Length: 192
Image (cartoon, rainbow, N blue to C red):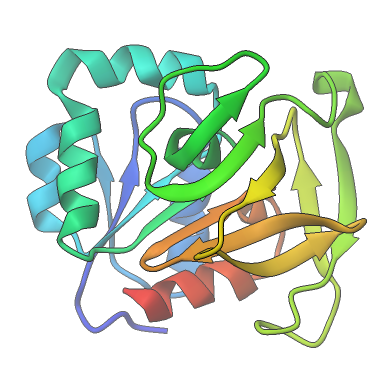
């Protein structure tokens, strides 16, 4: 899948950005690692990967990332957060409360599936994206505890929302880049 020439940025401050790059390579989508705020001018969409949200927030304070990403979103450019990226995009964060970008109207509870040793692979349904159960990898993942009125739930696992969308913002509590299934990344590329 080509991407109309628009490069996808992958925030490369911390986390599993390399696995998103590998997935985009498989889809033949051009990408760029985003390490500095001016890099945002060179991309058509941005992936905020999993990792450690509190560590990412420390990096955010160094270069004005928060305001830069909010401006990026205000231009209608698509954002895709996975796990910690979803925490950063949320409007409210629990366990404990922390800074966030507030770009999607959801409340997330950090590490709600448990500690690292409680990581698991589950299967969920994303009926608007695919007719087969989607493999979902949860690593110290957040749980979406509240979904705002303007947010669409695209995927559920064990009754909980795990893939949501509001406008140009897509957020997953799991790690689609850790599977062979390209469904979620393909969907994001169509948004770009």
